[in-house]
Length: 194
Image (cartoon, rainbow, N blue to C red; front, side, top):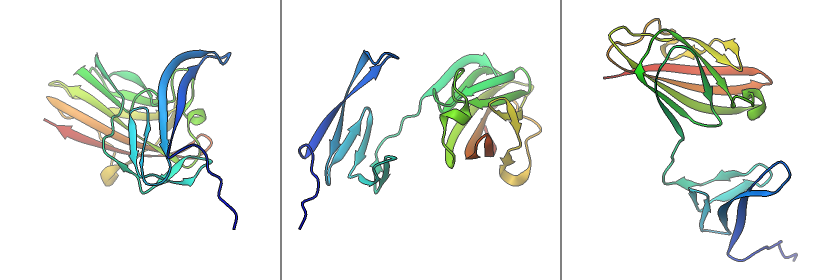
């Protein structure tokens, strides 16, 4: 009977480093502890309990318990207005703490130098939240774009909002499903918080 390939010990520490364009170490990020069998796997600040590797080529996991999820957020003391560029590789939540100053366009992209189309593979989905503070005169998200091209979201309840909600917070949640190259289905909702 053939013996399966075995590497490392019960737990293998894999050093993580950040490299520059010339493959020189810029920063040491610590170790990724990869456990074999029923154990806990820690990668950076993410801990997975008893992961089962389903497909090693793409890093898929099954039967994983994640105890705490933290999403990077951008909290800014500015107002929602004009075009908001939502850099999804940098944060999952944007929160504007000053009163909205006009209706706005939200444009989803990877970063200022990376398109959404190049940042994500086909058949993947990303969830993003945009929180806007509203004063006595409320405004709303009137246009949704991905990489500068308009898309028509499918709004919860079937109707796009035509106004914001005065004197509170409006939270917009978007699920962007990449169905092909530069092809997207966007699910959107607006929720009022007071």
